[in-house]
Length: 113
Length: 113
Image 1 (cartoon, one colour):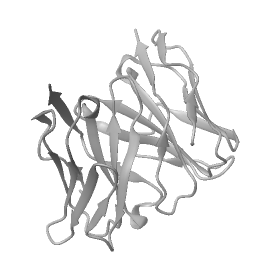
Image 2: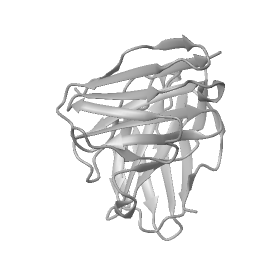
Image 3: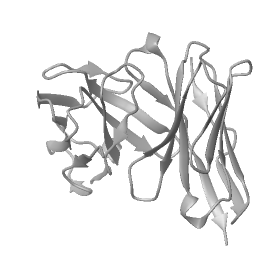
């Protein structure tokens, strides 16, 4: 079936380095993607989104890249800080699947001081 | 800011009990969602609602029911709790269903003994 998945379940980076979290999706009809951050004991928090008519979108210290050819999504965090430690989820939205998001399993980002 | 609140952060119930989880959003969003989150399984959609008194099954509706009597409130009901329903339950809302970001509440950690 259609799925959204993450390549790396855990990513450990040094404080100040850049982080890249990857996500593969299999539904070519998906046209909207979201990255969420979930800190321990809290609900997922919206970080950034991107629509399928875009390849790149930048926020504050974060950039999302979308490669529709290989169905790949990535979240780049610049100058990673301890407060970035969390689980990151990608999610895809497919109009053909109703008003529902499909979530990936999540990647844990650990920032070493 | 969007605010989604859930009635309890932690709940402990016994097998066979009826359990109510309440969710309230204050941004006049049309859509509301209930997910459960389990290690290794990510977020799975239980039910969602796109209007008052309307509900749709998600991916795992078995053992659950929902109620949406008012636009701002969406309740998840476990008619007879079982141990396999021990999980983190997350409520979310979105303005409409058309590629709108879902905003999450803080979650309710339910333990069924």
